[in-house]
Image (cartoon, rainbow, N blue to C red):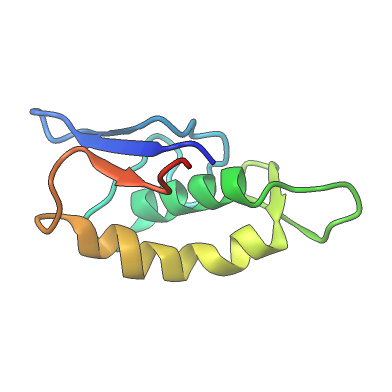
Amino acid sequence: MRTITCTRMLDGTATCNVPHRHRHHSPDRVDFGYVGSAPADLALNILAAALPLEPGDNDVRLADDSRVSKPAWDLHEAFTRTVLGWCEGRVAHPLRLLPSG
């Protein structure tokens, strides 16, 4: 599994090395450090990368008509609350999730 790195830039913008492929809650950005639409999209994209949709799997169609696996969908709100909402101000930047190895 690869390392996922999220960084808060000096202008306050959040960046992450996971592409914003699935746009369900936030059409234009991802973020972390609070519970909201941009962190929810970040969580959804991280989990979609970690739990990819396989042929024959149940899937969920998103607002942008992309699809993610049912497990990624089912876990993304809890991931937003418990990890992405908690981390701001509590961890050194950049934030690293899902370490490789």
